[in-house]
Length: 227
Image (cartoon, rainbow, N blue to C red; front, side):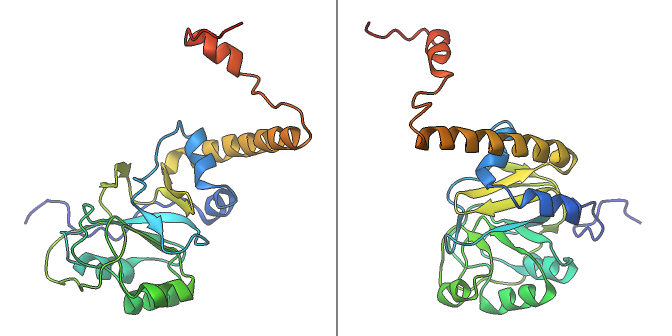
């Protein structure tokens, strides 16, 4: 009997619903900033509509280009609140999901999709308002016959992602935060958001029109300025 790890992992550790609720208050950009300006997927992954937002634990899927067999598996295994995150290698030759699969995912309670590949039935999906972040659209349908993996560590558009990691996405794009770091990142995000509100209020009041940190940053960079 083989001791090899199976291609499909059913049981994973997830960020908690409480952590997701706390994190979804913040922009993906805020979370990326306090996470060391890292964890952001390539900007080719965009929401189908700018108003779309999502937050939840990642169910990771690795597929071969143009095949969505393993996405069907992920939908069957996902719990309400999960986000299905698909490493499709940036291939654009075929859509990987459409209205039927999204309707099923929505009924189950899956929080949304992030795909490094295209989708189709875009008009219907936009009308739903269900959160989908993808690498464009393509009317060509996929095959359903090629092996892949579900709930393995993978790479999504330049970001290493482990199953159960936090995913937050909005009009700016997609940010991933390692599950073990979420509480600390939320605390940092709260402080940064408060600091930014103070800064914006100061600008609107005609104060702080030049960043306080700018002179030191120029000096550290050895940039000179005319007197």
